[in-house]
Each structure stands twice: as structure tokens, then as C-alpha cells.
Amino acid sequence: MAAGELEGGKPLSWLLNALAQDTFHGYPGITEELLRSQLYPEVPPEEFRPFLAKMRGILKSIASADMDFNQLEAFLTAQTKKQGGITSDQAAVISKFWKSHKTKIRESLMNQSRWNSGLRGLSWRVDGKSQSRHSAQIHTPVAIIELELGKYGQESEFLCLEFDEVKVNQILKTLSEVEESISTLISQPN
Amino acid sequence: MEASSEPPLDAKSDVTNQLVDFQWKLGMAVSSDTCRSLKYPYVAVMLKVADHSGQVKTKCFEMTIPQFQNFYRQFKEIAAVIETV
Image 1: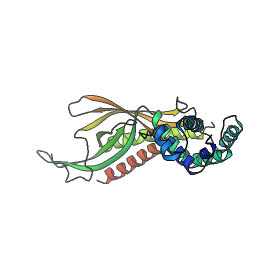
Image 2: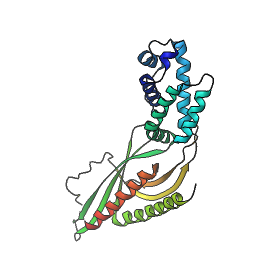
Image 3: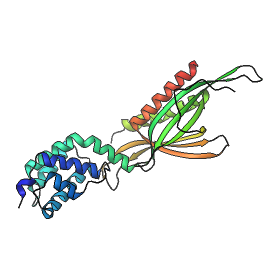
Image 4: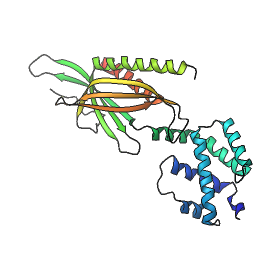
């Protein structure tokens, strides 16, 4: 039983990182065999497989519940007391990992759950348009706005919009209504 | 009609559209199959845009709250600039 090699420490830290890349951030090509050969070469595959499954399951549980640090400690302590659970060394490594990667994992989960396009970027310029052919000079400034939109895992789509000053102010008014809604939502108790 | 001189924005789209309608909603993502505790608010926007031929298309997208605040801030900047031109 290669229990010694499956203790905490650096390999587990790297394993959790790789699992996060695979499970949450969509990084391709992270196979069980790759992980075993790179991180736990002395552990036979039939022992590594359940160990990997256990770590992945724990990581998924923690991320799914978006555990705060109290919940995390309680959860990991329970795991150390379980039959076939984890060691306290492993618990410490997992705890440290979640604390430093929580925000990024959460962001990936949010992105994955958004099936609409997201706003990836916004660029703009303001042109001063002049019309001079058969009429007096008319100076109508125009804002050109380019929105970069994209669905999760897909290439960006660019949408170019033209606004005159009136339109810009109309949009601004609408956006202030949105902001008011957000303030109302945030100020409400959960 | 003359356009302005060389612009700093090099738009990746060849077609500029007119905004016909701007609809929005403020939503809260609660839970999903991959995450039982999502709990994040988002702004969903539905734009109706018309190209030069008058054809109207619908474009939908979502923003997180920080993204929306940046979006709003940029529009305020645009308004400030367009006022002075």
C-alpha cells in the first residue's frame, strides 16, 4: 500500500491545481495517466485512480457549496474522520489550496453557467461629422462603440454601434435605472 | 459627407449599426448543475440593432456587476466627450 506516497505536500498541491484546471477552467489534455506519471510515479494506477476520484470529488464539493472558511474546516475535519477519508496533512493542503484559488474557481464557475454571450470588451471613439455638400456646415458628433461579445469557450463577435449625443444620453438614463436596481438589490438583506 | 481623420479605434466590424432598442433585466443566478451555490447577480441586456439596410437583429449578452459598472462608467466618459466636440 503506497499510502506514504499519497500524503500531502507538493505533489498534492500540484494535483489540486491540475484538477482545478481540468474541472473548472476547461484546460484540455489533463489525463489520469499524465497526473500519475508526473506527480505520483511510484503509485500504481489502480491505487491512483480512487485517490484521484476522491480529491476531485472533494474539490467539486467545496466549489459547489462555495464554502467559506468555517464550512471548509468543518467539511475537511469530517473528511479526516471518515473511513477511507483523507489525512490531516492532506486536509491542510486542500484548505490552503481553496483559500488561494477560490476566487478564480468561482469566476470560472460563473462563466460556465452563463450561456448567453458575455461582454468581453468595449472600445469607442467620438467622431465629429461634418456635412458640407449643399447645405451649411452641420456639425453632428457621433460616438462609435465596439462591443466584443462571446459565449463561453467560443470566439468573440464584434458589434459596432453608432450613437448621436441624444442617443448617448438616453442610454445613460437607462443605465442609471439599472444602477438604481442594483443598489436596491444589494441593500436588501439576503 | 466627410468622415473624420484617421480614428484611434480600428473597428473590427465593417458594419456600424443603429441602436433601435435597449432592454435590460437584473437577474440573480442561484444554483446550477455544476455549482449549487452560485449566488451572483448579473445584468442581462437585449439590444435591437438596425444595419444600413434597415434589417433589425437582436443581440443578447450578460454582464457581471463589476462589468456593468465599467460599462456605465465608459458611457459617462463618452457623454462627456461628445458634449465637448
